[in-house]
Length: 207
Image: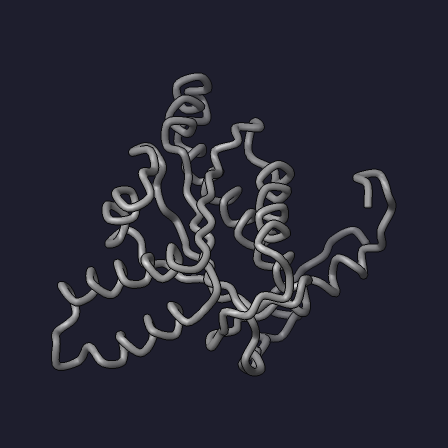
């Protein structure tokens, strides 16, 4: 589908509605690794950023590289979680490790700082805007993977794993880790999603 092909808002909203959090995941992929890479690349190219600053950075990990991430996370957590209460943490990490891959989302702080220097009037806003753009990228990738039949869950083990991640995958020092999206084959149903009343969350004027 080209960028100019019209689609209905309902088609977009339907994708948003079916995007859910799936925790137990398998290594079974419904699409190829190449397709997953294509999805992530397209999302990076087309998710908006303030002043077109393009501060989003991504690393995708499959197979043994994905498992290495969660081995690293487990080792780091062992230094901060008491041994006598570590078993629930170990089970959670094992669940993430059992998935097929992880998408690591970063912000390029060099870009953010450059925008602050070039546009001092908005200097305080650029870190916030960069994080908002990264959040949109996370959501876009997550929703697209769901549309391809994969399940995913979003984790935030930064900043305690940041230095180990940078060392393992040689990411630049100006890349700041924001989130880890774990993906794989669905092995069950998503949990129940409750909603607050829409009347408490939405207002309209002038309609």
